[in-house]
Image (tube, rainbow, N blue to C red):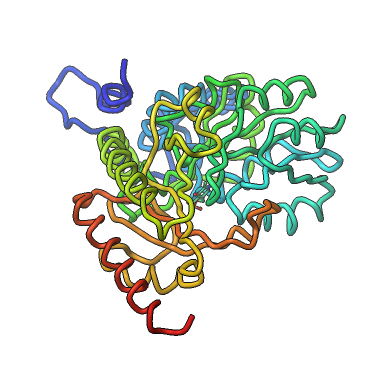
Amino acid sequence: MDDATRMVHAAKAKGNSPHAVNPPVVRASTVLFPDITTMRDYRQRRTTGERLFSYGARGTPSSMALEDALCELEQGDRAFLYPSGLAALGAVFLAYTRPGDHVAIIDTAYPPVRRLAENYFKPRGVEVSFFPPETEALRDVMRPNTRLVLAECPGSNSFDMIDVPAMAAIARKHGALLAVDNTWSAGVFFKPLQHGADISIQAATKYICGHSDVMMGAVVTREAAYRPIFDLNSDFGICVSPDDCYTALRGLRSLKSRLETHERSALKIARWLEQRSDVATVLHPALESFAGHELWQRDFTGSSGLFAFRLAAPLNKRSDEFVDALSLFGIGASWGGYESLALPLSLGSTTLSTADEVVIRLHIGLESVDDLIQDIASAFGTIGRDGVTGAT
Ligand SMILES: *Cc1c(COP(=O)(O)O)cnc(C)c1O
């Protein structure tokens, strides 16, 4: 079945009598049991990894419905929820590493991951290596004590593609788990667990929620890898509000059709930009000109609405002004909502050769693509015109 169908039917409310289409929001701390024996039985079954509605922090029917739908989306066995995407990334580090272990992190990982590594994991005795987004580079940093590899595909801001199955094989050979940040594909266009990864992570804040109004992170694992993160969530009391779960599940219903529009519009704009003489490069994995295009073509079934481009010199010094000149594009962190966004970004937080360069990252929303192109064209007009007379 296609994702569009699966996301409409996943985790629907059940029952023979008339009932609402959607599973209800169940708010709970205390869960009442009919007698002590039943309560003890539930507690016992929890220790074996069973997911049971037994206390608010152990999950509610609302969070479990969302987890079930996420397992279908990512083709995984177990799903876990967090108050943000970054919290999900931190939880993965915490669950799967102990002092003395080594973690390999891709250079193109979501940049705040570096802070987690430097400020929390290194000081607690976890060895950390960063590696460039290439298969051989991962092979070079692997150690006998490597327990976890964190990759992201395509990479944050640079959009570098990687060979996930090849990296999964390296991790497996060393007895390490491969976790992939899958936020860009939304789980629709890429299924890391079907390509050898053990853990898929998403900032559900982005496309899954899709309306710029909820923070949430999701981790989906294979059955063989779920236990450490299941224990972490119960030991730390990590849980997510049922209202947010309800909203995220509602987002999943329309995920595929929203992404089809994001994809079509972003590609049209990327191709339009690529032909302009005032644009140096367009970083979009679905463009034939992009370095990692063949990997994208092999492993992905589509592309989402986020990509970047570089202005040609000397205009590239005016990326800030370019973004200010746009009127339909919002300026702000995050992406994946229904609205378009633009941000000048330096790739400086990575060790890539392109480190000094500024790119303009666009998130193409659900507006009419022709209106967006007109807006971008007028921003080119503004900085181009000023460029003739003004000093830069
Ligand atoms: C935004 C983002 C995150 C963090 O998500 P939050 O919900 O904002 O914490 C993680 N990974 C990637 C690739 C992201 O783009």
